[in-house]
Amino acid sequence: MNSIGALTLVCAIFAIGDIVSIKTKSMISTMLVALLLLLIGFWTKIPTTLFEDAGLLKIGGILIPFLIVHMGTLLNLSDLKKEWRIVIIAIGAVIGIAIFLLLLGIPLLGREFAISAAPPISGGVVAAIIMGEKAEALGMDNIYLFATLLVVVQQFFGIPLASFLLNKEARKVLKTSDEKINIEKKLNESKVESNKKISSAYDTPYILLAKVGLVVFLSTKFAEITKLNIYVVSLFFGLLFKELGFLQEDILKKANAFGLGMLALMAVIFNSTSMATPETLKGLLFPLIGSLVIATIGILIVSAIIGKILNYSMAMSMAIGLSALFGFPGTFVISNEVANAVGETEEERLLILDHILPKMLVSGFVTVTIASVVLAGVMVNML
Image (cartoon, rainbow, N blue to C red; front, top):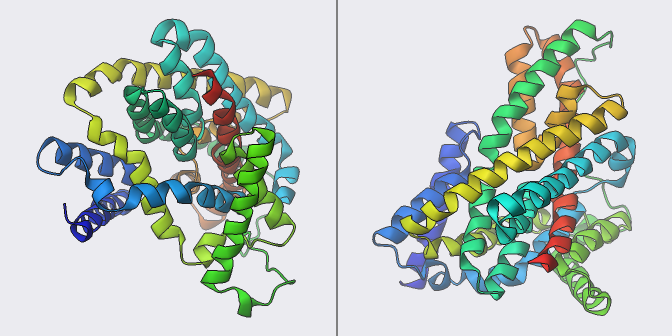
């Protein structure tokens, strides 16, 4: 296919996904819509070389560590320290996913499926890429597709359960809370911290991208020397250099490069769908559903136990753990939907949000941006 036509078609597919996601308030994700459109397209008239023709695969592979460094700049050490109990519950949930899939998943689903399922279920896109690349290198094309499908399907397990649990927590808050409500309090306030060492005049796209590139280069060299996973190193280097003041928070968006980077990243992830056939998908149905059921059980049990130890309510603890299945912006959307559904007045809605939103945002960042990437860095060597 013509390169311009291929690139335009890819953009259109994800644009349709965004439109559906907006219309359904994120209950139907962009990724699900894109997956269905691509499968139908590859089974009919869209060439299986679509992403290669669009020129996105090579640049997507190059930009992955750039995007992970960017993810590192979204983290905030002070918030993680302040919400240490939430961090422990969230990390515990990811460990629960791994333990239950290793203990139950291997005998029920098979070793390859169980091991490759844990990181994507724990966080999604980046973890799926780590496992998918290793699977592709080993010639396990079905595992690569399996990891991609998990990223898309897992939210349908996590969102309804988390919504139910947060509804219970919200009703409990309204019955037991004595807190004073400050209506003017800013909810979900931006974490952007101005970098006082560098004048904003120097925050041009080229300078910002050069700084990210330098951190990626250092990450690559450090990973080569230490034999650590490049993606894990990139994540922590992003956080480190942001805390040192060298990188700005949310830096790729400031460089106006995030959208194109994500498009290339989606191309890398969804390229495996070109190999999918109805027969292949039918063969993956049991391990797909089985791994998600096992992982969800692991999340609920481990989160509830840790929450009990840390004096958190069972409902809130399990909702925190389930954030691994959808992350941000799902954590933000669900919190607001629950507050609007349960709160009858503006004061009640603010009280509910003030209680559940910070916890869900922190847990989503911990599971998706830290714990899942670290888990993938460990489990990728087990394939």
